[in-house]
Length: 138
Image (cartoon, rainbow, N blue to C red; front, top):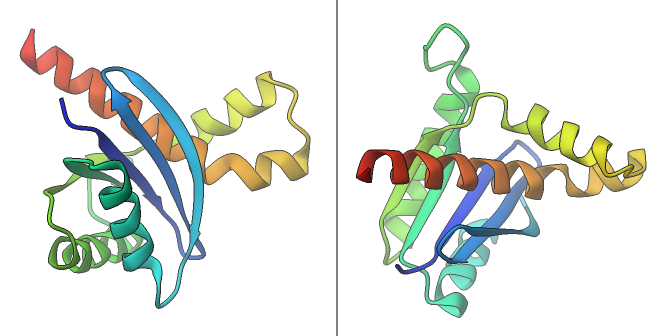
């Protein structure tokens, strides 16, 4: 299996996580939003020879595509045009809350949680995607 990059797209930062070996997911950090964001994602994909990018899609609790999800879908369109690999979306409901809970469990300070929350949310997105994919294959 080629590796997978996961993105948690926010208004100010993009959380990044990767799975290069089966089920092992590693948060990588964040990419600041701005003119170089697509190039930064492309470098992650090419440097690691990844085969897929999964972007968290913030579907509303009532299963609708709200304003934030529309922003993410516009980003996904730009990303698909900029990358040589497929880009998929994955329902990311609750991933930021799950990431926050995990960081709280580890005793991370407020500053450390703020610094790592986006990458941890991307890791949660990727873990959910991998779990759903393995269920589909079972």
